[in-house]
Length: 118
Image (cartoon, rainbow, N blue to C red):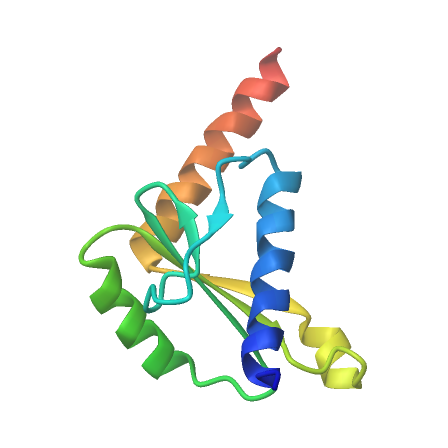
């Protein structure tokens, strides 16, 4: 007997791993099913993937912060029905801790400025 929600989660995790590979993060890999709120291994960054029609960000983030134990974390949320208008519009997004997001924005800006002068 297949577990439909688990299969959907696996599809979402594989999609995000493929996305990370596409951007050069070839060390990203799915973790074992027993890893609570840590779906993808990416070094010291805790990565969780949710593939759902209804999102409950606050409980997901609370649990993810606890599992990350002070480390950086990212939550990838994928709309569970991308055939619908809402699903097509929302698609997939990433949620970060605000400090981590600010750090990434700063690094992006410096990379852009460096690239401009080359």
